[in-house]
Length: 345
Image (cartoon, rainbow, N blue to C red; front, side, top):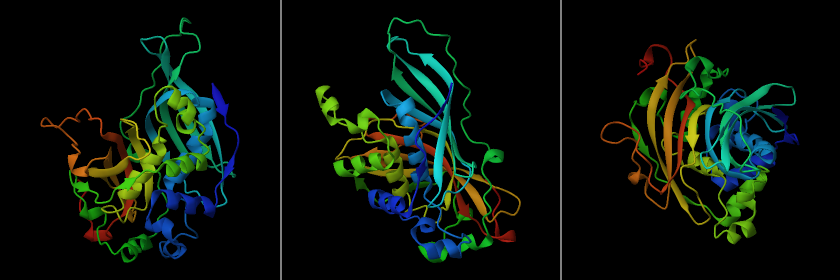
């Protein structure tokens, strides 16, 4: 089944300002027009997660309005920049279904893609969501679970036409660290934290036109003895903003390899995060940027020092209740020119 979602959405500078107000984002490329010009852009592209959350919101009425939970993401690729004035249209194809053992719900796998007003694809992603069955006794077809790659391969990462001037970002952030300076296995405990207010996550969910009842309907939640959930995309955006201290010179997302909302976030929770460098990717062709694959774990009401990336055997641990986000993604960061480059680890 393929669904073309209503209603196309034009993003504006006002949306950017509201996004910054809700997340505290300080990304240099999106903060000032002068920065963008100096880095070789005609204008400031919109932040990747603003685009992602807006496109995601388009899919909610048809895919996850009544969802039990949004379970995870894979193969998220930021194919092209989006600018103020661009209009996003979104389409989704169902790529898998699997009934749960309780026969009361099941998991639906979908691939969605967003295109601009020129018909150019700008974003594509896979997600899977748990939804109720309409009739518990109804027989279901044999499960179809798509094969999901753990990491977006280097050859499938978008190759933006970055100019050599992107290295000048260091003069804007005041931080000299470039792609060459990070080491695989390096851990960054980001010093900032942010409390999610009820008004913040309510406005964020409306900004993205995400109509999922779990985020909007406090009356229904209270009737079940629950609180409204903070939209997971807003948690991602806050954690991404918090990673600025330590990843100051990151230009943009190239991909989200995998992600999961491990535990719920509610109004009043304070978010903090830590990041581990997983891989350094040489994008080749004399590119002035390299790909840095990282894993950011977000926690609520806890210090980032409490985050454990791997147990004694090197395996990813089972997350405790205070972990709310586990995100594996790849960002573009300027690298040193020519012979000054270090070899890829």
